[in-house]
Image 1 (cartoon, rainbow, N blue to C red):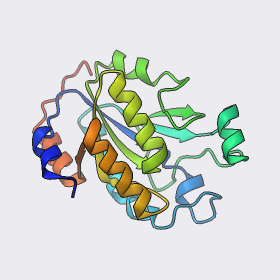
Image 2: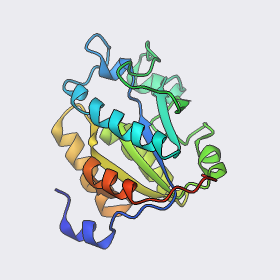
Image 3: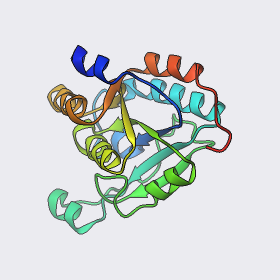
Image 4: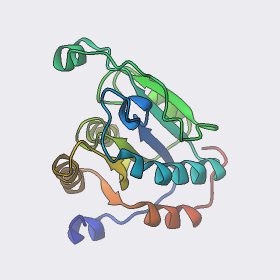
Length: 196
């Protein structure tokens, strides 16, 4: 879906990846959540499949939980995230939970240190919302020297326009865009480095 030039210029290659699932929590993923994203439940089985594949390969999986308690987030949204629980349909065993207060999962967290300690080279990102937390974290990872890979069918947004615009931006400047099938295929051929 994202321009053949970007896909062929930057093919999907894995060496030392980590899976980063952004804000798949009740607040966004459950119908009773204040910021529920209609249709988001469609990506959850695929997110679980990736999570399981990474854990089975003994590769790092980091799940962020958005709190949004920073002054800038409070000024912009004028509310607090009321439910900081991960999405119950996801099995979080073997994952690292990371709490964040802004769109950027690197900002004021130990994410970079966590990745560097595990000698991660590629961050593979999925989650919500594509145009806010996913895109901001991808840009931040890129400027920190990580190869960024976005799994398009594990990302969701409040509407298609935001979602596709963000993916187009990501593909143009700093991320390889892939889908879960391509990623799982690449993952199967990866020989795990036990020091990751």
